[in-house]
Image (cartoon, rainbow, N blue to C red; front, side, top):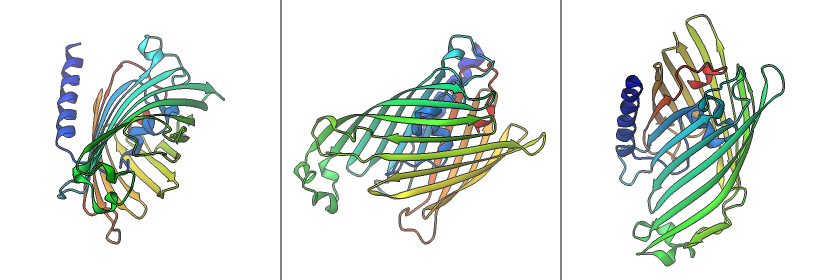
Length: 319
């Protein structure tokens, strides 16, 4: 118990440091997007077992007013929680809570997501997972920070020099296939298009967001494993986002990786896996020919596994 309290304290200090010293982003990108699978797709909540995870992202380093972003999530595999992990975890119920805070310019955006996932055995190793999320989103607008383009928007310019706050209630759905060596998922966000809202309504509709993600893991030998992840984001009013990562894990302790976001950036990643606590860092560099990312990005991820004695069927997805 004492060791667990020490580990939780170390993780808490790390998360506070990265949360309060980071500046983030506008669109909700994460370089280590496999670390936020449960946020992107509710069907993949609990895929790594029960954990607490924090992600902090510092984008456009050196620019005043650069976007800021951090994500805190907790995922609970219910059989683990009740002390009854079965021989096929990820086939039972799992729940998740995530809080995402994103700030850019005049807008301050906070999402609170409550997710539920269930798994259905299709074969001895292949599992179909289904999930749903209820989302509460509050958006605060500081009319003193509007740029000239935003001032020209008739829905927003009425708040020039003042403040506004809007609350949005919505739903996300997801499905996925999970195997010991791979996963494949699809999810859709904003099923109600933001039409359940309250407060100062300066956003009348939110388009559907579609996500397709997949990944694989396999052993090269006893000391080395390789894995990769892919993510596609599509929304009618934004460019299609496509990115992928490739990683190598050494002796189940240290991994290195690199990734690419098409038309945006390249990144380099480093992670350390301890018994219950994992840390990783990403350094992202914009492509020379892109004007979408003006400067480098730093991203930090810290995870704490809640039940260290649990035997997971899919431990490979934790890196």
